[in-house]
View 1 (cartoon, helix red, strand yellow):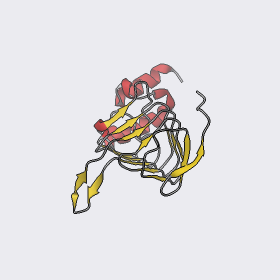
View 2 (cartoon, one colour):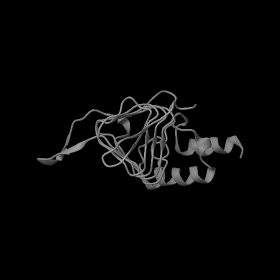
View 3 (tube, one colour):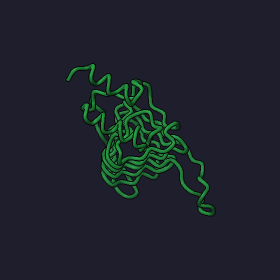
Length: 177
């Protein structure tokens, strides 16, 4: 497909700085852009977000320079960034992942509790239906198996996490770029 078609479609819906448009077909870009900008699903988010995903407090999401902004372009993603989320390069996210950076006060459900931001290092992979809870830090080259609930930090990285709550199942060899 000609590059100018991508450029025209991309400029209809998004600022070029926010995503790599060549990941999408023109039909996908039109569908996501229409649902997001015209219909209003995740309207304020400046990068493509799948219509079945929710991104809250997108301004508190920080990306490492050069990181691809793929937060939201998969089915059923839920991102709540009230206390902040930092994302490294080369993050892979599967369907149904939940990134939850704050919790509710147990004595007043209308009040959110403060916590450290979620930090996800370089070369991480979050499998289907993974839940990352407030204050968690994942080091570089951390793989989280499908269905795991990560409620504590694993800052050293180079591990495979699985289970509820998540625990180290295997140490991994260095990531190959």
